[in-house]
Amino acid sequence: MLFPTIDFGLFFAFSFLLVWGLNPHNTAKKLVLLALSLAFYASWNWRFTLLLLASGAISYLVGLYVDASAQRPFRRVALGLGVALDLAILGYFKYLDFFIAQALNLAHMFGLDLPLGFVNVTLPVAISFLTFHAISYVVDVYRGRLAASRSPLDVVLYVSFFPHLVAGPIVRAHEFLPQLASPRRAGDFSFGENMLLILGGLFKKMVIANYLAVRFVDPVFTDPSQFSRFDLIMAVYAYAIQIYADFSAYTDIAIGVAALLGYRFPQNFNQPYRALGIGDFWRRWHMTLSRWLRDYLYIPLGGNRYGALATARNLMLTMVLGGLWHGANWTFLIWGALHGSALVVDHAWRRSAAFARWGQGPVARVVDWALTFNFVCLAWLFFRAPSLDAVGQFLSGVWTDNGAASTMPAVVLPLIACGALTQIAPARARAAIGVVLDNRGALAQAAFGFVLLYAIVVMAPAASAPFIYFQF
Amino acid sequence: MAEPRAKPPSSTSPWAWLRVLFAVLALSVFAFPGGMVDWLDERNASGWLSAPLAFARGVDAASAAVGVKGAGEALRRWFAAAIGDADA
Image 1 (tube, each protein chain N blue to C red):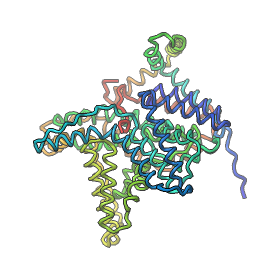
Image 2: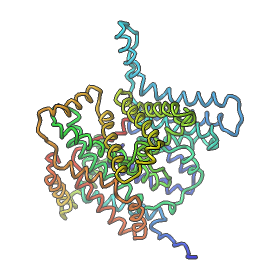
Image 3: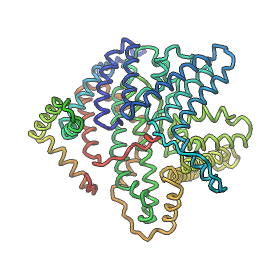
Image 4: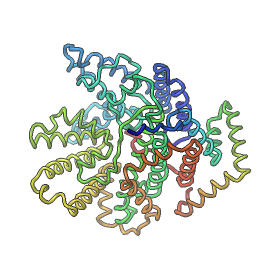
């Protein structure tokens, strides 16, 4: 049950009625929200709802033990075991076959015959996001940033809350759990702004991302040898816009849906293709993942506290593991390593005397932007290609031109321009329009919402591509 | 000091939100009824959705009778042709 479907539209309308109807009765409302979240997850595979419940139960129990105020012995060991258990679940479902394949390849190189077989297990939807939420809870409790919840319902609801369940944003425990303490007030949220967020997300996904994927990017990446150099290069830029439109659409809708149910999620994107430098890019792209990696991986590794070499090592490790989090494939690992290397260079450059002297003028800023944007696009090639062989084939086509004429559909350039517009539109525009909408009557709001939705349905292609981050 | 401006009822009441959301959904179903009919039809193998399916078909017929359904389909075809999308 994905967001831009009739299934979800009906599910949300039903959820909205129940949740606000039960709002004065907070425990009953949370029970219903949990039931709705389990039903949402069960729409893919009901068996994995047990995994969801188990993950929440483990987090709850470990949280009770490691609570910073409890002064129990071996708190650190208990935390380590809890995190290891979460990672073991992720490792089993997501990485075991990958590591078995690498071990078999290595053994084959040395002429050995290892008695290993693939487990061929079905990957549960959203397992990576589930793990991040579970780890966030126990670590926040251990650090004393949050008191251990006495309510197992709250903890299980935190890890399984359906708006963030499938593709984020990654809501840290201390941001969400306090919101479960009392009934919500609709007046704390702007209806107009959140309606715009949801409709804007539908436009980005159903029009920009779907057209780019179906009409151009997917065919090019399926067989790069059939396309000209120009098409191959444009496909990389088109993918940059597609993945932004696709992923930011999902999280925009998630943030809007959560707000309409009375819960606040953190922002996940802030015009990332305007970034000046890779460090800036990661402060704007998938911001909740960046913050999670910083708080729960980079800083525990030592952050920038032990000199330049250790900082570089920590940045590389964080980004390589961040890359591998996206999937068990060498392409993701190299994507992470590319970003890690760029962050090391960026970190050193911005602390250098040369940057202080030459790095901040208008020309330097344009060069900074162009280098950052093109580097990010180049790295997307590794992210999108199904294998390293496919990357080689793609780059070989860019070098030789494949002897093909350009077949890029005319619609691609306007779509890229549309995507670029989302990067330069004033950041406060949505909030301002939201306030205007909030001050209009229900009739004007309904008319506005309907006209936008009608336009989206008119423009959307018949075929659609799955959400990219759905697979993670 | 200026008094804080009271928010209008439409932005503070979830029931006002609900009216708007349901109105948008209902209007969308009336504008493009084919999607809802197909959706119900696909899930009606055992016949338990016969009543809502009959209702959706009624909406479909009403929408077609007043030309709303035809206008939506024509607009989709026009847009697809304008951008060269033969599959739409």
